[in-house]
Image (cartoon, rainbow, N blue to C red; front, side, top):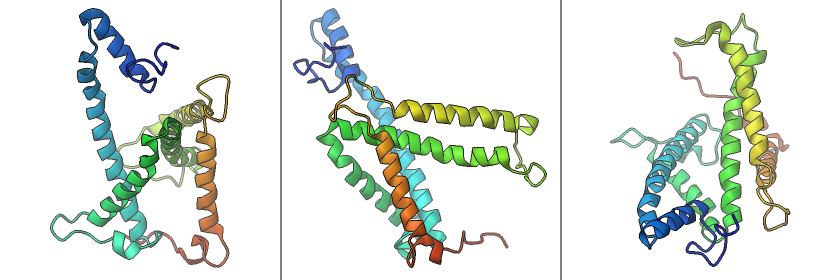
Length: 220
């Protein structure tokens, strides 16, 4: 592991997987440039993952704006006349993602924190409705066209357990000894986001609790 992360190797200690591929190609073919070709495979996957994330974020931005729960809602809920898509909301999310990831170019620790924090936040967002399903009155729950029947609640318990487990794992330090330059700041990032969100909602006078009246009705 020390050789893979050594700052004097081909990747400067910044890419463990790429360095492993480089070493394999160099040992077999006397040069490691074949690793660069293989590196494009995960890069293509990352490109499509980024597009899927951008789509999901734009969809949420449009939904929140439609309900009036987002600053500048009148702008972000507008649909393009030609495509009938929230193009402005897409550009907003793209610019915010760019601003968030720019420091990652110069700071590997920031990249690791944002990546792990994004995974934990996404998992928790899925876990909230699953957890509510466990404690919801089964007689008032209206199942959809597809449902798991009697297995719904047991599987929900397993899913919640798995989400809690993975969330804890992603907040653990990855190197020892733990120093300010190698610590895992994922938990701090999640707590900061939750604190800001709670403040913006419960703040007296201007918080969302004062003016937000709930989702806009979409049924006749």
